[in-house]
Length: 264
Length: 177
Image (cartoon, rainbow over all chains, first blue to last red):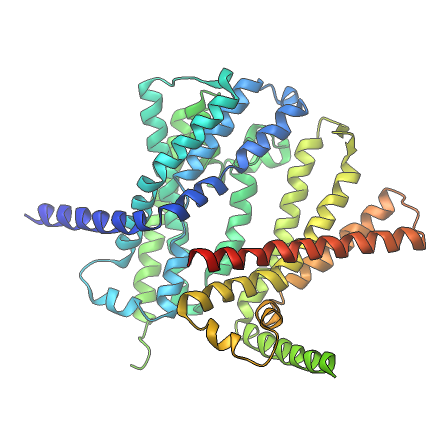
């Protein structure tokens, strides 16, 4: 009975958010196109034969960057910007009295956006293969499933981090600047612009202890068939989620206690 | 006379927008750290490209840093002047308050594209200049008056192009909204 109720909630939320997202399909298509930066990076790598020094062939590197593009497409998170706006506009108060944590709403919003984005990402991949026909490959089913799981885990990690940052809005009103700060290491260390194997050794010695390489580098390596340690990567992703989730719960309960609606 | 009026109005713009931005002091501090980190990140990425290659497309690492320096300056200008105003315009159009801007007895383009300023971009402009000075030293570029004048003219041209590109977007918004 309770399970049924939760099920219905999730379904309704997703349906509402999906139809909402379909309204903005042109904007989402533009967002998808703006994510093609890995392809520019690929060009820099292969046109200058930079990949010879890191022992990755042109074909493998192009698959890597295509996968990085895909992983990034399905792990984009903007919850802090939505939450900040809602909190500044005073929309959080009505959400708080509903018997549903408002973050489920944002979560459904993100999932719905990913569903909307999927066809556009496929079209971009199709064009990528037209220009790079030699890099076509079909990953086997288990690898495909595993990489979908790890992409989702990467999305979860980023969603949790941003939700924690978003909760800071209860104290500072503007938390998006902290998110912009966190985005810098995410951009440069996650493997979106250069695979982590190419990093100098003084960075590689500590980077695997941070969550960043598990956001894009690990799922992209997995899907593209590059060398990676599957069990270690997945367990690190799960470990980070187990570390971040209690933190989010804690900061959320502290924040809602601190929160007072305007005029109260 | 007219110019003096615009200068006076611009002073007021500066005053009000700086005052409103300084309301969120922690925000500015975080933005400053972000600017420094993003420059470090870019140089880190460049160094990865150059770690086993002396030249990329005929460019040395020290020369490529010049591009990074100019990019940082232009990005700082974008973040200081263009970006905050553009978001403001989009808001005006969405909420229907653009009419009030058009009715004001002042050039609308002047008003709309210079009203807001984000002080945290200044640091980026400064960082870019320092990087350029550093590049001039390590590349042993001889500074002469004509060289400086030419560089200044090209940078001013690029700022004009950047301005036009950013605010071309407004007309796009006019068309779709």
